Image 1 (cartoon, chains in turn yellow, blue):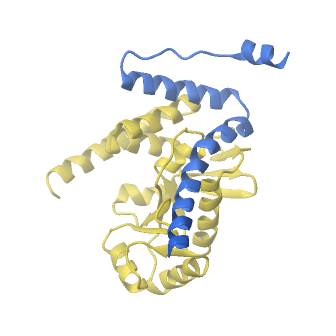
Image 2 (tube, rainbow over the protein chains, first blue to last red):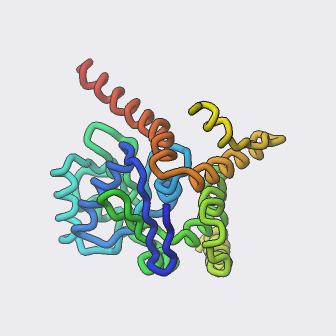
Length: 199
Length: 68
């Protein structure tokens, strides 16, 4: 695994598993219609963390209903279904009201892809703060390591999330910008305060 | 000869005093494994764990379909 911080690229020569192949299949459809960034657990898993997951979290840029309909149609044609609603109008309504929607392979519910528009400014920033993982013949956009660590450590905070963070910190020791993490931490703490106050 | 080489390369994990500490020690141990072994080697082991979950789900769906 080679991480080039300047190019913001990780080159991986991994053996692709069933989950990786499914993610690549889904992302290849997604990227034809909209910008995306993979966030949270699968970022750690793609980079070697030894755990399973039921979902792959993905931010997509806000899009019009017409654009979304085309994406939805292609997902259906390629064998995916939406767990939350049948009609694209209803699925789009969920997205527009800041709710994430889940897609899985027809006949299954896990693993699924939890897809959402960014809710807050800090989420939107992810589209300008991603790195590209090049593995086999695929390219996957994932959130920056610092953003990944900050959200896991200071927003999500469960044992699993802390362990996901430790994996990345150990693996990329010496290549992580802790000043950036601390800056993100401050924004996250503000968000948490607002959420506690019901804002 | 090969077993001898594997044994010489072995690194050991310190057991934790609590379950939580033990888990964290393993996460660090595994991250070090990923760092010091080829991508093919660690991903082959990781896929055994993850693929088995997916296969299990797909088998359940197949069983359900067969019983309909």
